[in-house]
Image (cartoon, rainbow, N blue to C red; front, side, top):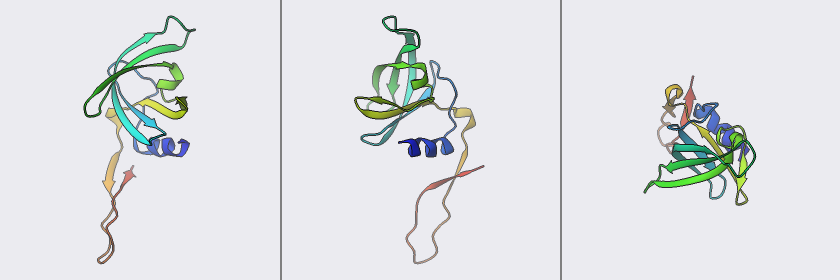
Length: 122
C-alpha cells in the first residue's frame, strides 16, 4: 500500500488540506482500487475528542454513492495511511489546478507487442 501511495503522489498533485467542494482520491487496499469522491460536508464529531470529523462524500462511481466516514484530520488530508475494517486506506484532496502533464509511452518497435502506460513529464 505504501508503494502504491508513493507512485500515486508522483502522478497526481495532492493538496495539503481537504475542504468542502474538494475532489478526493481514495486508495483502498483490498480489493485494490482507486476511487474519486466529492467532499460535500465536514462536521466535527461532538461525541469524540478534538480532531475527529464526519466527512460526507459523494463517491464518483456508477452509480454515485453518498457516504459519511468518521475520520481524524490526518486521515482525510493525506497525512497518513489508516485502516478501516482491517484494510488500509489513503484519502487526500486532489489539486486539479496543478496536475502534472502525462504523456503516452512511445510506440513499440515493429513486431513487438505494444505496451500501454503513462509516464510523468516535468
